[in-house]
Length: 451
Image (cartoon, rainbow, N blue to C red):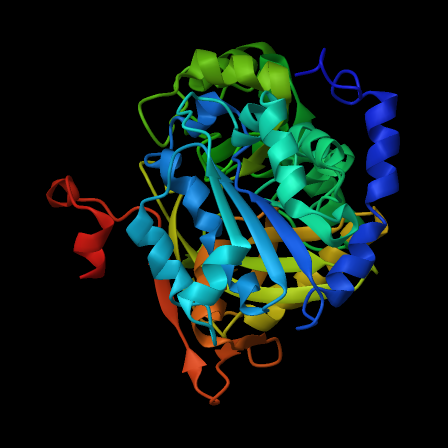
């Protein structure tokens, strides 16, 4: 990939200059792409460009590339065209299901404007990496797209791979600049929360070694003598799979040496969401990526809402939605699904904090979609409190169901009421999950479900 490219290795000065020259086009494209008379092309690459070892812990991850099929709604504008790429072929019935819901147009007027390309490659690599290894495929995409000044790249998450693909295609990337990804790490999120002036969980960031962890946990316990649990998080993880729960002994030695030894022993017994992680492997990854440690928040009521937002190229901040996340697994940290909208009891609180955080992100140059996770708590008879937990500079688990709702109804989220209002004035609610599992479902085809 790198040796054959005229841009040299990933992140080369040539690549960065080309990327910087392309990105200003996005402002004009996004300002005009809803114009029913303006022809343009979306190139959709639903690559999960993340640590493939971590991704392997997520059941059904091979189908996640179909999550962005909601973007087909863009074809409701007759001049709009789209290229949609996947590693493996999409079942025809699945594609037909989405196409028949493109509003206002028969399938026959939509299909000619859609090019679906499958690489037939199930190897455990990000889709974007697979595309970059196929220069002929890139040429075919460019030929089909036509005028590059009217095309843009949509991705699930942005990394240096997606930046390189945008440059190779000669189109702007509609996502955060990969040079800003540190902001979306667990450590970067905590720094942004402080800059925004919002409450966050007690803890420390930028930890890399076991000794860093031991000292940070010791300081947390000293500040909160009744603290029983802490959460250790890898900087670059998702869906709660990169989290380990550390249970502290009820009593720790008063002397520092024995106390640190006791905390170190507890680290050998970290609890994880599944059985595919070990304390030794986790601590090794911490050394590679860094991480944070945070106090486990206890309260009579605890909820985990998430706010989706978007920053446009002109700096406009948009609030898209607010969901209550459903978390589970053995540690209660794994994303299982969501309820929409989030509870009205604390939605105004998290929306206010999300706006503050988004303004800081905008000042750092962030553009595109992102999510902010919160923890809301209340004691009996008390009021709700909110703590910001992390920033995900990408689409998240709440993005596909919400966009599917927009696909089907054409409504919008009312930030004043915290509810979703359809064109007829009715409010819409839903529960969505990525974890609907049963042995009885094995062998079922999409047509069985649609019937």
